[in-house]
Image (cartoon, rainbow, N blue to C red):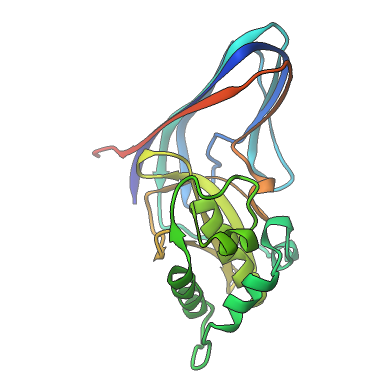
Length: 259
């Protein structure tokens, strides 16, 4: 438990100017039972009016439109949060029991699931540990091996990937075991990039688990959004007019604040 300060900046550089740029952002933490928002702001460049609302999952979204030509698009989300033990008590939405586009239990997911030994296991939490352990025996972390379009089954075929892939495979396996599971996007304490993990439902409570690191989550994780899979909660989505190539620079820092 404690106070965390976060600063998240994303900058898109376009080789040619674009215009009529509409965007939607999920870069602001939610106020949740375990996550109290002390301060937060989201700043956009080029400057434009932002509309703030919520999507169908209750995630905070910022949307806007930039009409004039521009070769750079940048947004910065920063603030402070107070974290307590990561638990969310709420009624189950059965939607999280069903498969989704990224988490379909196709042949490789099915084969991996059949190789998990669930005998002598009494609790859902114990199943989660078993599933994650089996995932780590068969999948390895490597950047650049997959893309944001890679499904759980395709990631297993490649045999390596990043946090999004771990979360998708874990979600597919958990739902195969009839465990309600949802994909989560957010920040992890330290420096680097955004992170993805899962929440599973047990006895009326959503509990967090980080399959990339094969560990339980207690604190140090700031939740931005959740959904059935990545498609429900990307950090940024946008469309614009123009023919261009783009490069992306991301800078994330999350650090504890002394009390």
